[in-house]
Structures are given as C-alpha cells and as structure tokens.
Image 1 (cartoon, helix red, strand yellow):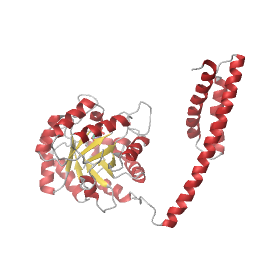
Image 2 (image 1 turned 90 degrees about the horizontal axis):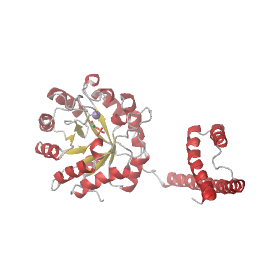
Image 3 (image 1 turned 90 degrees about the vertical axis):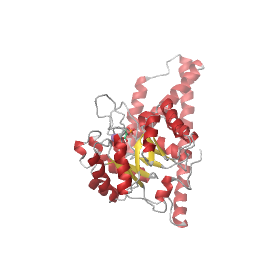
Length: 362
Ligand code: PEP
Ligand code: MN
C-alpha cells in the first residue's frame, strides 16, 4: 500500500510544525451544549481535530449507546461556527452516508468494528468514490494481520488518506491498563508502512486519567505522529468512559508537558557516536547467540543421555530450580528478574523441543 503522503490530510495538518497531531473531544456527544462547550474550550488550544462518538458500541446493552444522527448536526455546528475539523466513529454503511451528508471531515473505524471483516468491507463499499480521510483503530484482540486487513479493505476502496490509531488490546490478564498496549504490534505496523501516520489513544489504553500523560509520552518517544485524548467539560459526569476523560484545562497541561524529541541526531559527530554503540551492541548480540548455541549443544547431549537411559525429557524439579536461580542471577547482574524468566520460558520450550526430537524423532 502506498499512502498519499504529499497531499495527506494528516501530513498537511502537521506540515513543518514538529508537533504531534492532536485529536480531542468527548468520548460521546451527549448534548448540544456539552459538544459546543467542549469544542469552544478546545479551539483555544489549537487542537487539529475535534472528536465525538455519536453511535457508541457498548459492551452490554442498557449502557448509553450514543445520541445517534442528531449529534451530527452538533458536529456540523462546531465546523460552521468554530471553523474546526471534526471526526466521528462509523460502524455501518448508513453511518458513513449520514456522516458524509453532514460533512464530517474525517471518519474513524472503532476497535470492535476492525475485528469484523464483513463490517469493514461494508464500510469500504460505502466509501468507494468518496474522498474522505479514514482512521482505523486496532482490533480489540492483538492481531496485526487483522488490523492490516482492515486498512487494506479501506485502501482498496480508493481511500489513500489514512491513519492508524493504537488504542491497546483487551486482555483477560489483570493489568494496570484497560487495554494493554503490546507496543510491538504498532511498531511492526510502522515498520511495514512507513508512510502511514500512527496515532496513540492513551484514554482507551489507560482507562484512567493518570495514565494519559505517561502513555502519550511513551508513544511520542517511539515516533508516533499524534495523540487522541478524550476530553469532557465534566469528566466525572460523562455518560461513557468517565474515568478516562480529562477536562480541557487538564488537556492543556498534558500537551504542555509532553516532550517532542527529534527523529534524528543533529550532526555527524553525534550520529557517529551512536553508530559506535550500535556496533558494540551487535557484538554483544553475537555473544548471546553463541552462548545460546553452546547451551543448546549441551541440551542435545543430555537429550542423548536421557534416551540411552530411557528417562523422561521433562525433569520438573530441575526446571523449577532453573527459573528460580536464573531470576536471582539476573538480579545480581542488575537485570529485571521477570525479563530473564520470560526469556527462560522460551529457552525451555526450545530445549524440550530438541530433546523430544532426539527421543521420539518428532
Ligand atoms: C472511542 O473512541 O470512544 C471508542 C469507542 O473507542 P474504541 O473503538 O477504541 O473502543
Ligand atoms: Mn470512549
């Protein structure tokens, strides 16, 4: 896919500013007054795009499901009276048609829609022949191929003005995040499609106000192009996502505190020093791989030995001892024990694979 970078809605908004793209506004449009009040406050902050959900996909029925099409008139008022660009979530062909009729500037596809190729295709069909920028949130499950698939469906409908939004992934495991970030997935997406802008949604990743700043800063440190932050004049009273919205005043503080770092070193001297360090890191990685090869050769020897003596591959007590001691050794060496334990889980799987191959030829 080749995204339209030269005349991209997103790159044009950012042109030469050296600042991230900022999308802000309430999780949901609730009343005309709330929408106008939020937009007026955000207009002072020169945000690039005003967001508000009109049709809300909620986990369980009975929660506030959005004000529906009427809210589009309020967004249209924000456009006309305040001169701001506006965006909303679409999940069906009808949403697309109605949003376009009210001249919504940018559409976004939500995480619960990205998971469903039928729904994404329906939206793509409704977008054929239409010139509107589209942002695609990651699917709720950590599946890069599904995210790329949704981007491709929209791209093949003729939309080349796109951005991806990273809003984290749901997980059954307890975590401090509402949706765990799994940073490797958006990083891989960025690596594959370098011209595709990637925007972080720290509100849905964190699920609480306190995490908006650190998650946004981390994303900027990773070279993200923008942030989408849920903003409400009275967050505690919000009809959806109350814990993760901030006031316009708090948004201003967050934006003021974010550090935007350079994408490159300023001069050749500095670049050369980084290159020297990279060479040393390459050498250290060679050593790690050589040490792993040596370890696996020993594993093969013990595999042969177990075979000769007709002994089981998995020696549970031995493995427990390895996990325990390697965690301790790691800490003695100033490394995070949890990191080395994760690494040893992988080493364990490979050691077992090698030994069962020796024992049973499978
Ligand atoms: C939203 O942005 O309010 C929203 C519903 O997000 P997501 O699709 O990421 O859950
Ligand atoms: Mn929300």
